[in-house]
Picture 1: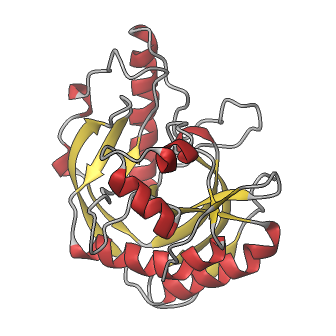
Picture 2 (picture 1 turned 60 degrees about the vertical axis):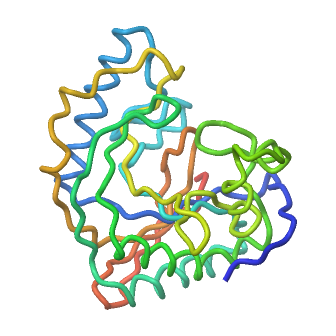
Picture 3 (picture 1 turned 180 degrees about the vertical axis):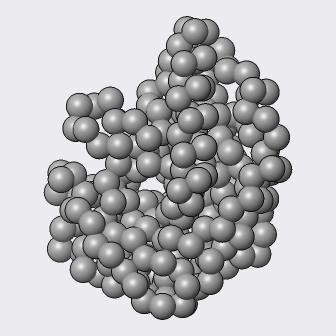
Length: 254
């Protein structure tokens, strides 16, 4: 389990990785369509999105932004990738598919529209297993920024109550969206778009009711991350059927 130690910053050779659940093809297509629609309406109100799911990442590397639910973000090097893939296969071989129900569409504090799922013990148990398997690989390394671009060094340096839970989790895990014995910060979701500014916010009513979203997640993956929490490179994926059937993808950044 995680160590409480001072985290060190990443080097240029490090990769920021995200352990995620990948949605079914049907939900992937649906959320990509919603993302494109949101991006269009966000342009119309003068607050465009930095990306659209299912489309190329705008930085010019032709990487596609994949719909996903984040479980744990961490830093690894090329030398760590065999251990990353081994941890992926180990976790996937021991967990069943996860049945999920949509809870709501809502903006996060930065104005990004997201599809949130009903929280359950299954989500918390899966995240606990993922953190136990992947956290040791980071060896104290800390991501430079969070998905919003906030420097994590600033979060750690802030001694006030605003970021106390985040600070504790960053020191313990290197990630600050975890539900554990102390803090309850894990809210499983798919981020559909990310605006340039927190305001004005796009209207979410056209998305319909989230409780009509019902999906079985049966694909655990590790992805390389780009800005705004996007997953743009598949490092590896495995089915969560109790059988160890891992597939290996590209190195992050390739």
